[in-house]
Image 1 (cartoon, rainbow, N blue to C red):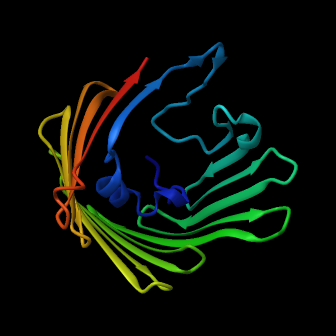
Image 2 (image 1 turned 60 degrees about the vertical axis):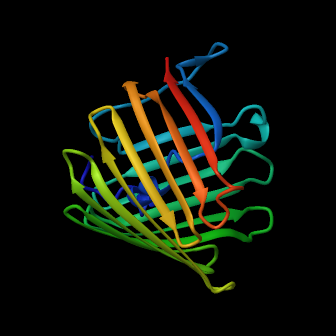
Image 3 (image 1 turned 120 degrees about the vertical axis):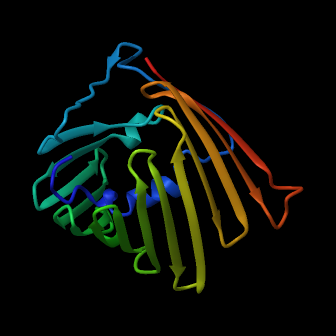
Length: 239
């Protein structure tokens, strides 16, 4: 990874991944491949991120309304993403950060080009010190304040703790979520977390091949244990 600030979505990402990533209910099967029905999908990988990339993305089956053209640029002291929908009245998105690997300040906005209205404007700050990462973000058109904390306890076992506090100004509601993770070995990881609403969740994830594995997760609401137990199973395959 380079010395730059990354992109806007990197702000608070470590804490978000620890607290929320891979938790789910129900069944999920993910298959990644280099071609789908003859259409080639190209993947660019490397030790260093490319300074600038142009991307075209779409979602099946509604390709026409979801095709986007985007550009991403990464530099030592700045990084930005911009995308626009390829429609008659597209939605334009822009996010950018300035700073370095220690401190980063950024914004994320979306504009309806037909009306000129802002659909989204967020701002965020990230501070990194050795194994500690703290972030502060103002979201939902300045209606939400979110802070997060991530601490890597042991790189050898990928042991870490994290916390997130969200305050909604209009409803005066506060949400606190805490979590932890630990690797039992190079291929197996366990995670657990809880929030102030009384929900407790945990998972175990095992990979038998890079990007191929399964995740078993569960969640229980301690205020209604007999009604809200959720179990999830996810299988990921890379062909």
